[in-house]
Amino acid sequence: MEKLRDINKMVEMVHDANRIFISTHKSPDGDAIGSSLALKQGLEKLGKTVTVVVPDAFPAFLNWMVNKGDLLQFDQQSEEVKLALQEAELVFSLDYNNLSRVGKDLEQLLRTDETPKLIIDHHREPEDAAFVAGLHDIEASSTAQLVYDFIQAFGEAGLIDKRTAACIYAGIVTDTGSFRFRSTTAKTHRVVADLMDLGLVTGEVYNEIFDTNSLDRIKLLGYVLDKKLTVFPELELAHISLSEKELNQFNYKSGDTEGVVNYPLSIKGVNVSCIMKENGGIIRLSFRSKGDIDVNLFARKYFNGGGHLNAAGGMSELSLEETVTKFEAAAKEYFGA
Ligand SMILES: [Mn+2]
Image (cartoon, rainbow, N blue to C red; front, side, top):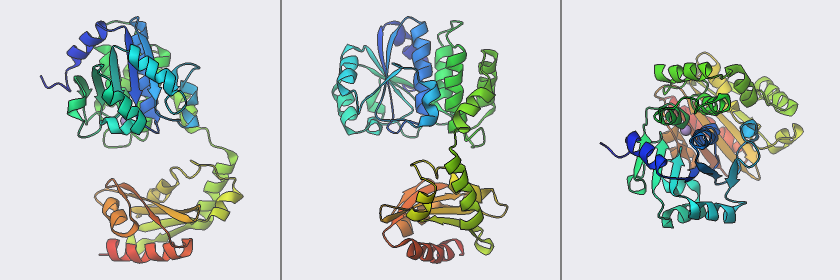
């Protein structure tokens, strides 16, 4: 059996271990935190002592999931993390495919440590040599969905309670863009149905994650959509630009423009969207597209960036006005063809 699909070996290794160390990637997202806490809670019900380690801070909209003492943050508690790793008999790598994804210092710690490592993940091209076994599936909607399968593989009732179900759901709902990305399958919905049978109330979790806007943020969004949205119907494209001064009028905090770039894509006939944002003298650009339109190549070619087919970023050292002009010319050349 292929070693990164060997769930039975993983179950066996967990049975033989008492102290378990769970790690996840830098800038942890809903799937990283949700899958890690769900696995911790499940393993604790099996009588294990579990430490969850995140490399750095996670966004505030995930605070509801995390109880005091639930996890260690490496950039603030490196000594505690080292101790936990020394004592661990098994290390889990959750929601990342390569040890470099945890950040340099923690990566070094994990690489020099000889505790066997298991991976549960859905990112392409896992670092095979780093792991003794794993549950790796690039077709899974989320790592949280794989953690659900893993906990079920122990074949014991009661390992997933309402709180654990909420953590798994949080990972699934954030990684699938609320069940709209292509990775969402019938299996994804079946897992959620099972979680609901275990006590999950989907609306409660949804509110915790998505209904956390500040008034300033909503007013900024209103301003952007009313005053700053420019559409080029012939190019099937729209852009938004924001100066530092404008952002400050709405007491901008990092994260406040997260997702704003997606709004233009909801306009019928718009297939490419760009937001240009001034920050500390440089302009950061973020691109989104639909279908086969490649904004990764566009970002590489014109704005020193890159990313994925439908989501990419770039930067510009020109002024905001000059960047807008450059973007419009580049877009005409690249998307107009
Ligand atoms: Mn994920």
